[in-house]
Amino acid sequence: MDKDRNSRIGQDFSLGSLLKFALPGLLTNLSSRLFETLDDALFVSRFVGQNALAGIKILMPIDGLVFALTHIFGLGASTYAATEMGRGNKEEASRIFTKMIIMGLIFGSVIAAIMITFDDQILSFLGAGRDIIQYTEVYVAITFVALPFKLASMCFGAFYSPAGKPSMGLFNSILSGVVNVITDYITIVVLRKGVAGAGIATSLGFIANFIVGIIFYTRGKYDIHFVRPAGSYIRTLLESFHYSLSQVTNSLTMSLTSFVVNRTILFYLGSDGIAARAIVNDLRQILNSAFIGYASTVGPILAYNYGARRPKMLKKILTYNLKVWFFGCTGMMLLGQALKKPLITLFMNPETFTQSFYDLTYFGLTVELFAPIFTAGCIMINRMFVALRAQKVATLLSVLRNFVFRLGITLTLPRLFGANAIWFCFPVSEALGFSCAAGAVIMNADNYGYGRSGAAYLIPDPQE
Image (cartoon, rainbow, N blue to C red; front, side, top):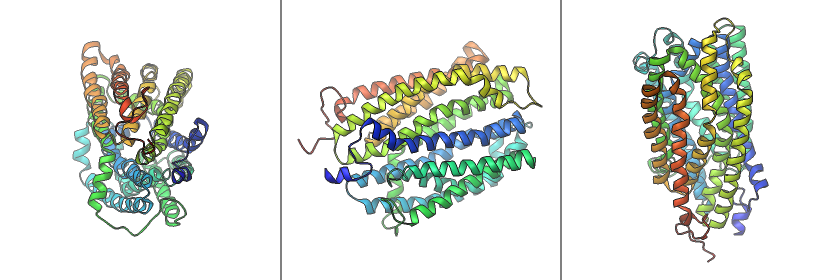
């Protein structure tokens, strides 16, 4: 027990100390999302035009595939390493980290080469028409060159929490964001480089994160650092995949769903619909990002206590999570509804602005702002099951939420109720997904010690 209390992620948390520990991760994800919105949405939409924004956002299915990889190299690997740390194997945790960085650079290089070589065929398949494909081709050519640095920097970011220095994630996020925004302003507003400027800014942000990560993990001052790699790379990759299976499944199903949603929006609303959806998604995801950051930071704490067989601490952390979710989401939803009009106006290009495009975006945001409370709940519950090694449960919930419900609702509602029903698809599918997730939490209460009985059949307390 003393060993647990001496570890940064094994301490006896109160609600205040947990929030203090999670705050850097929360702010990291929030600031990262804010800067990404400024980069990929606000600057492009306001200073280039809505067709350029649609050209970038038509790539969302590809982004889903890339995110699947970042979950393996980031979330999966860091959870695997945190579990080993809970078992007292700190050196093995550092070996896991080192091998995943090496493989991330290799995988990123291969995928970038494929994407750049076959961009015409891929973009045509995604549905990019003549009005937007010119923007998409430029963006792909620039941003995918930096894909190896993106995968490595995402891995670096995921390991700051188990390394005991979550504040580094916040620093890196701010650094990347500042680089992004400054470069965006220079290349898009001053030099008039259009989407090429956005691509350059995004790439430089990932490169900056990569450089900082190399410096941090080379110094060897914290629990996770670079060591000489040993053991099977394949086994490490498969274990990391196992720990991230639900998130990988989530990203893959979201990729397919994004493809179907984009095609549906193009059919009913055209490229303006893609641009409006991009703005709505970015603003909604800003609200979600804080809870994603919180869940990602607290996840290794749950994994550590699971590995150390401490069901009482698990129950305590999960109780705190419930309070953070309910009160935080309610406040953020009300704030979003109050600020939606000025926020949408920020994205409007004075030269290409139309009232119909504004009205489309306003209606979509009004409807979709009811979704974050369900989305955050799904994410936090899914992350809990990942940390508790209940991969089958987490994966099933991801498939139901992001494939069965999302795809089914998207294919059904617009056909029954018309074009405006597109905006109801996401909130309805998220509500259904949350209902299933909440049911899974209740059903597993006695398996992990957070039920009223106090039983923890799958993590017996060694003190009993």
